[in-house]
Length: 482
Image (tube, rainbow, N blue to C red; front, side):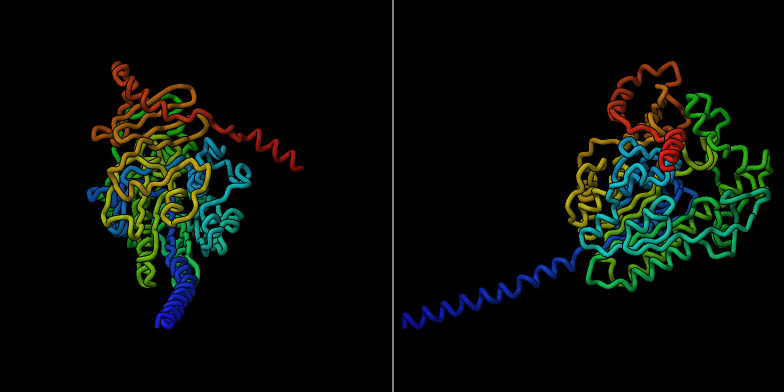
């Protein structure tokens, strides 16, 4: 009997071992299949005057509110640079302008500065993801987009109906009935979302062009903002009196305040007036929000939402006449503060609001962390997962913004400190007193009492900065190629 028991025991152990061995590959497959998809939504030029931040704000963004209710809204998120090319380059490579040398829109194509950079979607592709992209994800699309995605749908040209007299190119605004570029982008992304095989995880990027100029939208979005009830930003007549010369130059760059954007001086009801532009921007923003809603509806319809990380961001903010500025290209709050939302199933709690200042340069390491991918070395940002898990987690770093080499802003919870390349400075109290950056505390007689605040913010300024690739260097490079 002992011999029989021994034989039976041996057979039983062998059988158990073989069953476990047979199940191991299956377990690996299941783990791989559960890898999270990523829906990556980029919006162009959307500022913080939207209802996702505050229900009392005038620009209606119900779908951003809906998305924020599913995950975490970063209430103090900032771009790296208030311009398209450097902001998107920093976000998609994880490298600040001071590292890359990509400081403004003239630094395009950005690949000249970063020929070996592994972009965010490319990194996901290298780690087993199927990657699809559409619309304005990278600045200008083109080779960078096609090289970064397995499949990429170029942004369709904008219609040019010339609503306002004298308008040219993209510098126009108003209601239109033409099919807009984001219709093509979102429809393509929705089809890929619905039809993508599930043998691999999906990284799907949709770049929504609105509310970038031209501020076109279907008439129903203009109906949301009756002209006689329109709310405009506060615009004190003396707003630039306490601003250094380099700040004034930024505010008035590209002649957007008076010049080719506006007739001088237009009547309020003139299609070329600032008030008409503000209305068109608000309508265009709500149109962009509706496109986000379509993407969310499709995601829910596919049944993939519970296994999808969603990240939504805007490349920079936007002025609408405040600080005597129109569009961006300044270091003040409204040009840099952006909507930024992350939904990470199993990590984020619905309706979370995080008031810690963060930067878009943190998106790259955060998504790798959330997806369980190996960390990418030498990135300038850091993972936000600790804040997603615990919004009260200790976070020592403020947000850093750069507008041209040597010009920087540091945004902490309560302050915005600006230093220009000539050493001139600004400081704004952002707690509750001055959200529009009207009063430069370093321009008055009491500046000395803010010395400790200034010192605390100065220590976050970059110690080294990559050289600027100015027009002379561009010409030199072209001559060398000849």
